[in-house]
Image (cartoon, rainbow, N blue to C red; front, side, top):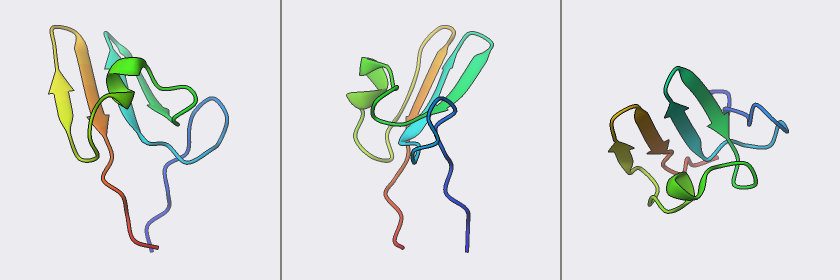
Length: 60
């Protein structure tokens, strides 16, 4: 069974990954940037120095 990825700030389940320049973070709904929250599950976005990926829901 795969281990769930946790938010780097509070240890809740992460909803996605956001990379701003050289800073990469796994974040929960409470700490994610609004751009990450706007993505649908499974969706990815890449800009100049920004990468956002919203995780797809997993079955328990």
